[in-house]
Length: 203
Image (cartoon, rainbow, N blue to C red; front, top):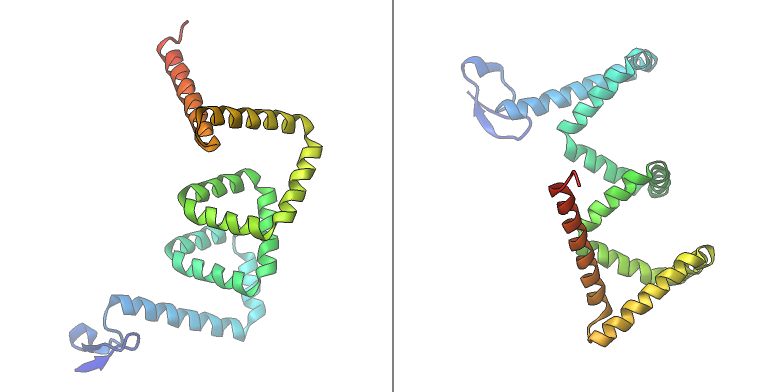
């Protein structure tokens, strides 16, 4: 006997053990089970919402967090799409929550930002150029405030920058190339000193 799957619409044979089947295979069967249980839970909640809320409150919070965490690991695409919809529906609320999280987790936020910048260099530089062009006055104001608050650091930085620029002009190369050469020399000297200490730990 032929029948159409109620999930994908594919035609399949209803024979033997599958004489009462309504889906074509295990994958569609899982989808149907999820849909049925979701509908059943919504109906059950609608019939007695207070009872369901009380049941959730009585549940152990650790077990519930663990169950939710496992479910999120199994359904990363759904979680990603859900968060995207939240950002689109509540941009201001999401931005406030993101700022609060960055303030409370400064080290994690900085590490994640640097990791993203390293893996998406071109995209980040494009964003940075657009941001600087759109907020040039604000950036200049922030720089002026930082100079007033840190005169010694600004003096050291300006002396170093001007010295590097003059040295690059004498060599006939761009300043950024000269700075890259200095950074390379610094790291090579650091690695050599570290290897020497490893070879002679008792000296």
